[in-house]
Image 1 (cartoon, rainbow, N blue to C red):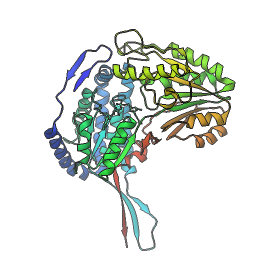
Image 2: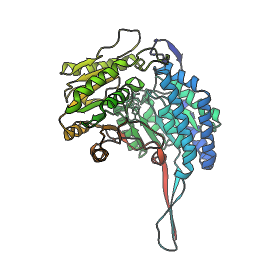
Image 3: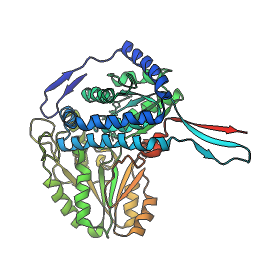
Image 4: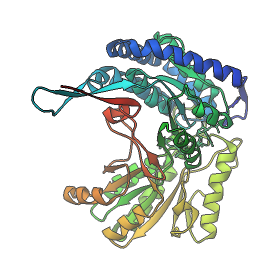
Length: 453
Ligand code: NAP
């Protein structure tokens, strides 16, 4: 597995892939580790999560630089990602004991009924490169607290991050093999899921990968959580604070250089404020600093791989061919490295690729809505259902429309984000199940009913 800096094209490291024997040994070790890990009390497990937060904070710079080098994340955003990982560890260290506490249920006189939350065993996590630390920690923190052990199959372009995360848990004092990284390609994932020693699987990634993991695990009757792609709408109504919406919306599109599942991707703007919004939005997009991800002033770094930029540009190019108008950007920058400028497309045909597919880069598609109903109709006209952003100054209107937007979350007058305290996940082709909060920690546990007469 090669680790290549997308900004420079330089090879950072070359790792030996794990073979079948290595995987077999790792699964055996995970099974053994689970026996003793599940037996510890939850407070003890949570103390170690607090220690993991300390390790992350002590080595923020090292881990941030690693992410920046392996996948091009602007360094300031990488530092924030490490801090967020520390936060999710601390969140579960504090709340998991209560979230996993046995719950008394209604029963007849003289009886006792309760639900206990028991760990399941080794869980496989297949993870993407775009938030190479955060995606893993939001799986690992609740699952380790719950008493499961983790097996990480990270994306093939971030093996250094995969090994560094393993190291965080080791340094924090977790038992050996409670969390292991498997350096394997996606072709070996099916075998791992089918192995009897693996009890469940979660995947964060594309719809295609989600379908594959879901199919195999379904066939094995193993539970899955799937966090897949999105094409989140950003709806701006006629009573919105348009300038603020443009500023927030632009950042919501280009965060992580546009490579975020919950980035705002389709901007749906009420006709009465359309021109004002587009002018302000284009200005905001033009103001971003594109450049070296190691420079603290950079807002938008390179795309994580050359082939990803090419795929994204093809979506833009074909949408323009189908009738979209380029307001700014629209062509890769003629620089060394896969750099793409913040791009705004208007007059985007509803059946074009920018409207119907996930655009995983800093290119926004803007649509004009006749009225509120039309805006909701465009927003829901997607196979995805991850997040939705809604801008209006009217709270009653916001509450009513939040019911109508078909997505796993609706954020009003801000942009969709993930937060350890809130459940995170999608519907439709964005997947199923939830991560984070008490909802996330209960996905991979046996909710055991005990009834005593
Ligand atoms: P990807 O190609 O699906 O890869 C994600 C992970 O799945 C990688 O570890 C990859 O391994 C593995 N994988 C790929 N094909 C597989 C298969 N057929 N069977 C089993 N595993 C497979 O996605 P990506 O390009 O890395 O990430 C971008 C996608 O992730 C976007 O669609 C984005 O929206 C989505 N995403 C969703 C969320 C969410 O929370 N909903 C968060 C972040 C990203 P290899 O690298 O070895 O191929």
